Image (cartoon, rainbow, N blue to C red; front, side):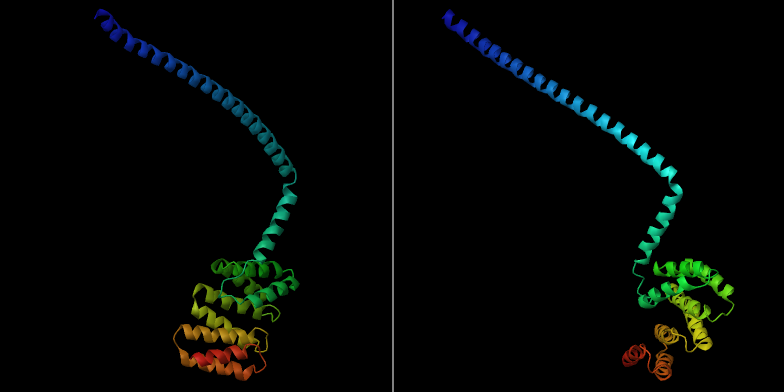
Length: 234
């Protein structure tokens, strides 16, 4: 009986000792794995630090080169920006074909008008109508009614009026262009856009009269067909 009791006492201790032994082995294995992982991480961190140092050196080198070439780089950057903005499609309110045509036209203007003309059209293309206004006003003042510049500027003043929702400015600008230079290439389109303003204002009768006048005064204009289509909708 005593042997049996002894066995009952020793056997659990034996199991506990075995469990503890295997636990220690497992713990040692885990510690070894952690040491290996830590070693790998240390190696990776060292490699990353070395890479950062290389990148920092490369950045300093690039900054040095840029500082030496800053004048030329800025000039090239301005050219690139101009190329990019010239490809941006204008807002729907802006006549795209006429904008492209006049962007070419202003490059042939006198040096007194070319820079400001290009600036106005660049801002119009980007839909920044309010920013374009002061430049256009300055150009009109400088032009002093010169027929080589004023009609074109008046047309784009009308477009700016359309863009900012200033119907009065749009109507006034288009009307002044037509009155000054009725045979100007932009006159028929100015009249067509006048009619569109009247339609927005809810005055369909005046819009009809304007469209009929366009068809009568400019029978060979490409805008005659568009005027005819608008009349059908009124």
